[in-house]
Length: 151
Image 1: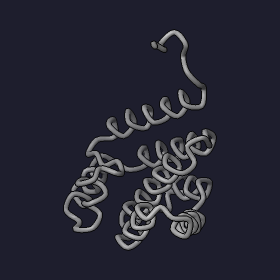
Image 2: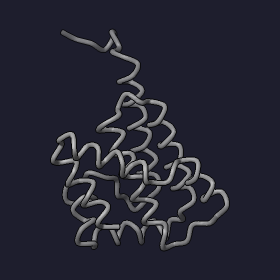
Image 3: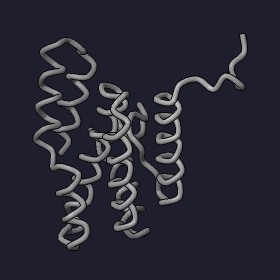
Image 4: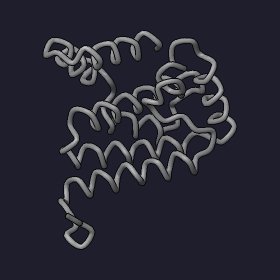
C-alpha cells in the first residue's frame, strides 16, 4: 500500500511524459467506481481493506484534480463514490484510519506532512471538503461569475 503511494507521487513529482503514462496505467489498474460502489453496497469490504480503498479513492481524486481537472463528470462521480464510502465507514473506524495515517512512516508524508490527500478524524470534515472540491470544480467548469469579477 505504501509502495503504491510512493510510486504515484514519485511519478507525479517527475512530471515527464513517461511518468504520466505510468500514473495513467496505475489509475487504470485501480477498481472502477461502479465496482467500489458494488462492494460497499454488498458490504464486502473488511476493516483491513478500508485503508486500501481510502488510498485508492484519495489517489484517484488527486489524479483527477491535477491531471483531468476539466472532466467534471468524473470528478463528481468520484466525489459521490467517496461520500458513499465515508457513509459506510463508521466513526470508530474512521478515527483508527486517521491515527494509522498519522503514524505510518510512508503514508504520513502524503497525508500529514505534505497534506496532498485528505485525512480527518470526523466524517463531517470529509463531507465539507468534498463539497468544497465539487463547488470549486463546478465554478471552474462554469466559468467566471461576472458579478464577482473585479479589475
